[in-house]
Image (tube, rainbow over all chains, first blue to last red; front, side, top):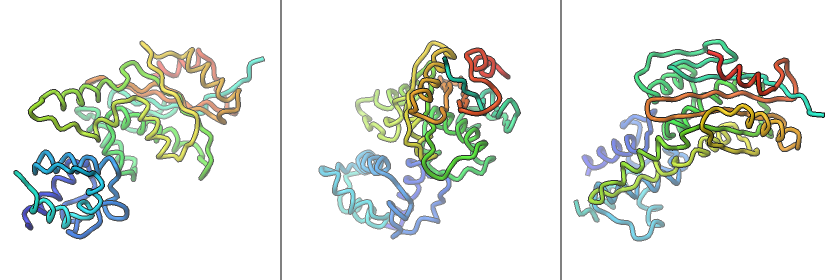
Length: 85
Length: 205
């Protein structure tokens, strides 16, 4: 799980172009949206694509993303339970 | 009788250099546009992380407007600065990148973050968000820089009281080629807003 969380932090920084954020600045339970990393709605769509592309998870209902993308911790938990690759 | 307006400030970004009112303010021998604009962003100590999410056209427009608008006194709220930009290549540079990303049907993962920049006027949105402008705006595509059209359109926005001033210009990115020229049309100043003056400033090296 900790390896997955590390991987997620690296992917989030790279794919969402967070040039001024370092991996060790993201805590597992930091909120990704709002006051945390300050991600926006387009970032949320990118995360949905990332789940599909990298972990074989298709979100049937994008509203599910609200819970899943709360933090790196919630993302990792969801991916562990649902991944097909 | 036509009203007389003025060009208060202008900015060029081209050939790895940025100039304001004809004076060089930044230069860097970067290998490409993104690297150059990133170094300019850092040099001007710009604190706006969303910059890194933009495509090349929006980064270029953002940087030119940043340098130009920082040189004037902007009220906290309620600036009625309209934006009228133009170029030759529309958003073609990003369109190509997006098309490339969706050309493999076995690896079909369209990127929403790239897709949102497949319209040239998005760069106007980025400037408006940055400077809290809720003003008139337009983006035109021409074969080449069209001083006549920008002159008429910019003046008409002030004539019709749709704007107090107008940020006009040319922002073009196509593969390795890029160029931005922006100028601010105002009601007061010393350089009279004419088609000839716009052309002269555009050609100014």
